[in-house]
Image (tube, rainbow, N blue to C red; front, side):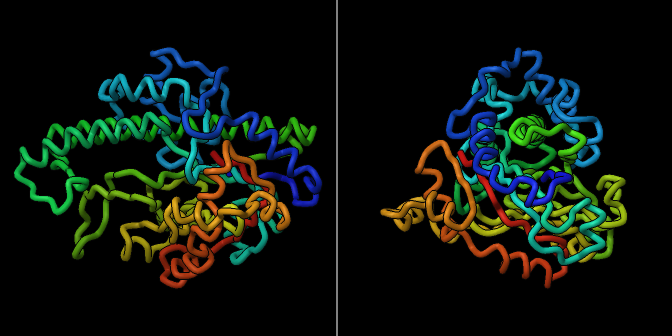
Length: 380
């Protein structure tokens, strides 16, 4: 999530042009790739090992961005040599691309502030223009997963693990299969960090270009970048004792509290930012992590509203409707690689994220800071 120094009124009448420019500058859709960012084999190895640090070293963003990224933008222990040739081939031209499905780049504004002190600490103010980017490791990460599943199905039999479903294939963490998968997964996560860092840089260039302003006026700053599909080794209290655990978050994100040693210095007094996007027609939320999350959910919160319709059901529900026009009538400009993705992502396909966030807030897992309203969205 990025914040700007602009208010909603500053881009009034230019949102549609911004969306069109973002769509031109950030490749979106299945198999999308950039023609002007070609990685050599050596470059790709560095991306997998260094993550967002590599992107910053190449001029994408600034070093201070790394202070606002989970793990400083690089998960240690990554092994690029464990990433298959097929995965490398799929990711070769996909750095700096959005992809498809529920991935998006969204220009919005701060509609409601619930915690003025927390909002101020994050640099948020009423009516402020923000940008949220949701994407990951693209085809490379998908292939890393596919490759691992084949090995772990064999490992399950090797270690005598009985499963109710083959898709739950696994291996002991200390086994060679387990260690190799974690190292390959870390490499994919680093690709994702670099991918989002590069996209954020192109978001800044696009806004400056369309609005004809410089960086000092735009003041685009990274609030936080975080993972939501990863396994991490962390220390947690279990039955009164601190233990080293492997915490797997799928569709979930860290919600670490104030003073936690694994969050950036700038969030030590507030707790870690928690980003919960909704859908392209309603709203998204910014929250802060709490001590309660450490005792209730291993320092975790949800990352999104969650679907209530399959993609097929959503497409059926949208049949005969002009979804883009419906959104435009509500002041939200949307552009996608094809109608298919947009109809699969209609608001009705998701739970109302306001209700989901209220549960998170009332349970004390994370506390509400602000609600964002979309103005323009690009989808894959």
